[in-house]
Image (cartoon, rainbow, N blue to C red; front, side):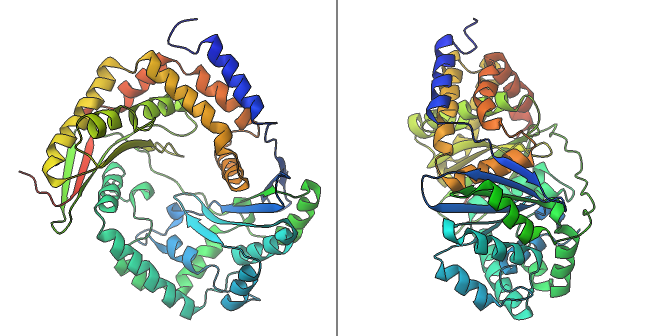
Length: 440
């Protein structure tokens, strides 16, 4: 077997790690009559249950010119329903010791909580009511607007957020949904009305867009009946599809500076467009990025820029392959005096990766780390529920947790190095610097 692939020892360890985690997740998948999907995974280690409801109604569904509307809806959706007030909902959750988390990503609007197994049925019914029939009272909207505006002001005063948001706007220009601010702007949030939120909910929330994942001390058969009772009467047409524009990688280098002279630290966001999540090359890209900017103390980037050169408070890279081509982003926090040296060092590390590639040892260590982290990533009900939502959203298959080690094992050193050559090039990098810095 060539040295750039896994050794037989690695295959044996992979099999051992997979088996030591226990049996495959193998969730029970049910499609209700109205199109809603239920994934049930019984686990009986503790008498608790995680409920994760994900609606394919994320920020890409914001109306043109109104980014932030879905985010505001997420802040107010639990403040009353057709039959319960905000106080009623809060009392029911508090009396059961439940914290409800509501989140928005580009593609998903999620309600997540963990409760005692005995509370699963009434809590699922409550979450279904919140999701299907929010009342969106005007007074609650006004209160939540104030909270969102405060959060936007905090983001506007944060160099790391400013750099990251500006980078995404440059990588995904011309109003592309991936380049818009999820929270919107103060002016837009102030202008939003209840009628607009009601219309957005009516247009984007439908049973066909829902995946309900329940993991914990439950009976899958009984849960199917409970989910049918909670969601089965919800009848709405499938929402119109959202067309995402094609994304083209940059062909030249672009550098933008956002002066924030009252800050002590500068933040650098440096990125490229890469691939979609369903691209077969994803696993090679994942391994490449892990070795480059995540493994151990931050991969090559952390070892060079933070540890050996000592000129960054933090440095790492992240890969966010998605429905359309996602970004690979390198982020660093540095003192103002080290900005130029840090950017030059990132350029050097990117060029070295492209020209010389990873070593067999780097690939092997990263692969072992990623495979070894699978059991740790599935230790809790909440983690399993999140994994199953990802599995369902991208259509990865109900046996994805079993196949994942083999998918990582199949990516060769040449695959990973080819990924670097295709995606990375300092002459095509988009670079944003935010903080107490000005171009010389």
